[in-house]
Image (cartoon, rainbow, N blue to C red; front, side):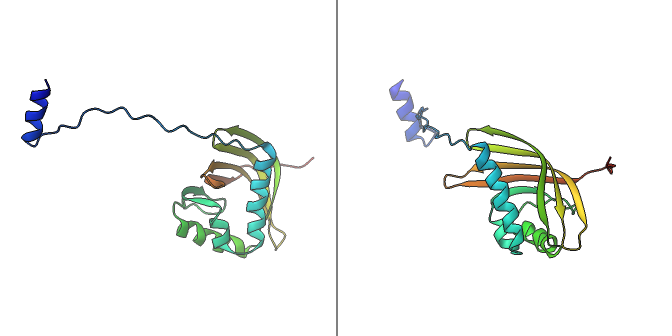
Length: 156
């Protein structure tokens, strides 16, 4: 058998033996619920800076942004910056109305309803989901979906 493998190698055919590599152990980082609350607060505070680049830096480079007041899916840093430049002109400030937080190994999900109030005193209530991932240095947004509520809700 060894002679056959050697002959194949000498002929230039594949002779790489199947090697089983030991997997590197995965370090599991878990956020607390308070960490997830703080992540949203950091994002919301970044809106107040008016700096679209600063907001975009909170996302992983290949994050998916499905924004509140745009129909265009944003997949790159530049696309997210372009969206936030327009969004930030409105002077948004977000407030969580209700949320559910789920925590896993190197990921966390914050989903619920929030309301943005703008500098002209208009507002929009939207459903949201932030998915956070641990990138080895800190928590970053990997997916952010925000969609305005489809039905108006009457207040009692």
